[in-house]
Length: 195
Ligand code: GDP
Image 1 (cartoon, rainbow, N blue to C red):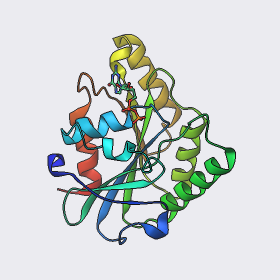
Image 2: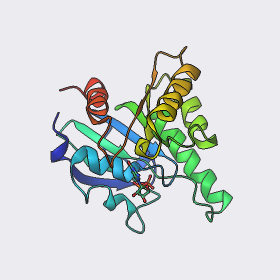
Image 3: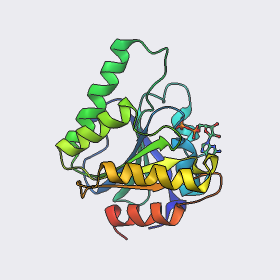
Image 4: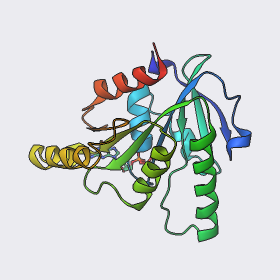
């Protein structure tokens, strides 16, 4: 699995517009500012990769990146812009939920949270949707360089403990800045996407 060859493929506003539901994909989700774009850039070693998802008009779209003919990374719309009207938020939620529940090729969800304030409402909502359809979730506690070693480990343990009962939920620390946790993230993606 070579992440460096990832290239932007297409965008879709909702499930019905997604590319054909064949092969395998892994989706990245998180509140705005969680560090999603940075993580995708770090993973693919391409500074421009996720900038595509941030161009005006694309921020509310599901963005697809191709790794091979049958393997994709998917950048889900960020969430939590204060100024977005409630009706728009609700529409995003419906689209996100439908994508998570119905997309057959989706093998797992990478859920990014700032390690300084993990498990906000949005994060819990995503986890409960994933749990309700037995979708595996791997939590990335991002910007771990902003915490000292002790507090970072304590946060990781606390998150792991909360979901200790659920075999389909895992968690790790991650820092794009220091590239910490990159091998672990790659291993998880390899587990879901295959070689
Ligand atoms: P997104 O909105 O989830 O795509 O978040 P971005 O990737 O754009 O990151 C949001 C902010 O956090 C930016 O100012 C980044 O520079 C910063 N950031 C992202 N990852 C890291 C990290 O690993 N360490 C630190 N210190 N800052 C980070």
